[in-house]
Image 1: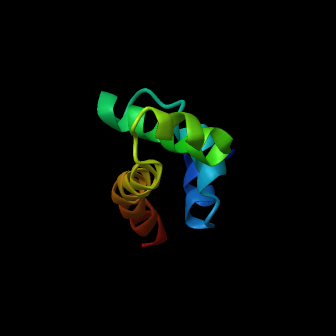
Image 2 (image 1 turned 90 degrees about the horizontal axis):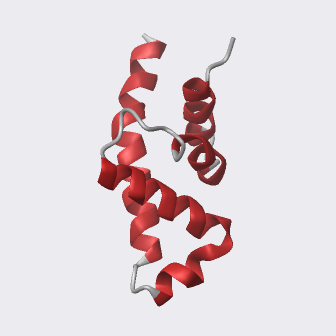
Amino acid sequence: METKTSKAISLLHSGYLKEALAIFSTFRMCFTKEERRTLKIAYECLSGNAGFYRQLGIDTSAEIEKCRSILLSKYQRINKLNKV
């Protein structure tokens, strides 16, 4: 049985960041409050609401890159362990 985490990791490594964020942004554990905020902002930016966040003064491309680095730092390690 495939878990939400394994499906999200698979989507992330396949290059489907928006779809992976749809799952990761609902996680409450494993992420700090600031990391969860970054994940939600990045997901909403990729879903077409980037203009709203730009009006608030948030650099949307920086948030997306920050999100990508958070996910890769946490889940790339797990993917490498599973391949061994």
